[in-house]
Amino acid sequence: MRKSLRWLVSLSVLIGTVGSTGVATAADTETDATAVADAQSAEAQSADIKDRILAIPGMSLIEEKPYAGYRFFVLEYEQPIDHRRPWQGTFKQRLSVLHKDTGRPNVFRTSGYGLSTTPSRAEPTRIVDGNQISMEYRFFTPSRPQPADWSKLDIWQAASDQHRIYQALKTIYGKNWLSTGGSKGGMTATYYERFYPRDMDGVVAYVAPNDVVNKEDSAYDRFFENVGTEECRDRLNAMQREALVRREPLEKKYKAWAESEGATFNTIGSLDRAYEAVVLDFVWGFWQYYGESVCSEIPDAATATDDVVYDTIDAYSGWSAYTDQGLEYYTPYYYQAGTQLGAPTIQQPHLDGLSRYGYQPPRNFVPGDIPMKFQPQVMRDVDDWVRKNAHHMLFVYGQNDPWGAEPFRVDKGARDSYVYTAPGMNHGANVAGLVPAERDAATARILEWAGLSAPTVQAAEPLARFDARIDKKVDEDVERGHGLRP
Image (cartoon, rainbow, N blue to C red; front, side, top):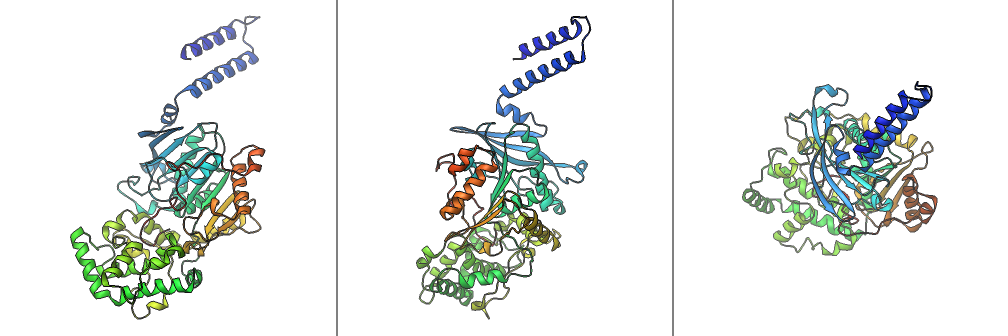
């Protein structure tokens, strides 16, 4: 190809200098330039996809992992620490590309947390049978500037990270783009759309919380008063209460465990605070990831031994969640919750007289040497923009998910945008779990936004079959773990 290009260039020069009159015309020159450009484009298209990606300035390869039918690359991309002042330094941000074909649509996925280096497909990727680009959120290790200026961790800076990655890869992946993510990833996709509404052709946001007014959390209280059956709610509340009634003997067990594991409590301040935080997460965590179908597995609190109460709380909340070691990875999330995103606070009347701290604020989960100041206007701005300006946006929630108590909504100003709720589902809600009419409508919108043909859209069926080796289960496309986090 290189020899052919050199020959074409030589020929164009010859034609340009020795025309019928011996003088090159403007038309000749334009034709020659087009021919050279076409040849260069053809040569670029024939290059290996890895070489094309790595030709992007600032892009470097960490590793390639093979998977049948795909190429999977784990990459680093050089990003400005501050997109408003790019001359003030850069950092390396991880991303991955699950490559199928440059002629297919593209899905830009983020969890809002770290990056998995195992090949996987999000639901929209399977629906459109496309390529998938996944991004590690800034300040999650190792995508953290050194030294870390935490004031540069905000939703605009993160959206600008996505924008630059999109701009860089759009030169290779020229078909339609959709952004997606679950939970904090759904929030991330929404914020990206708010700041860069011309980048994506559609947004699919799963179980994305929308804490518009941080101090007003009564929606969560109403949720816990009505979710599931009264029998199940009473069983959970009794176990949670019992863990605080038996605080003294159970904290001895907790202390022994912490000493054996080398766990410390400097960030939250004390073992007692960590103990209560874990116990208070118990009911929330149960509904977020489990639900009514396993409620019968919760032991009867009145007859349970100390060991059974201790182990039950551990199973659903995790005693490690508020240790220094458990909090460290999630510092960027708690920082954002305490500066822009907000965090829920719920009333738990069944714990009156037993709870010493209530729901603790995000400030308690971030090292004290990192300054934080809450910005109440940020979420109000996003909520207002989505209500009035949403275009090609789809929000999916689970009926029994606590985080869906404060959802995004679309008003009259929105266009071709929807909010659906999957009955009986929790934090793993997805399009497949919607009632049939809404499932088909949502699938059709995703296919159309991806730029696929009318017959494909009308069929409203995912284009790729489910593959358990690479497709996430219903409840795995969100950051799953212990602690009160989306």
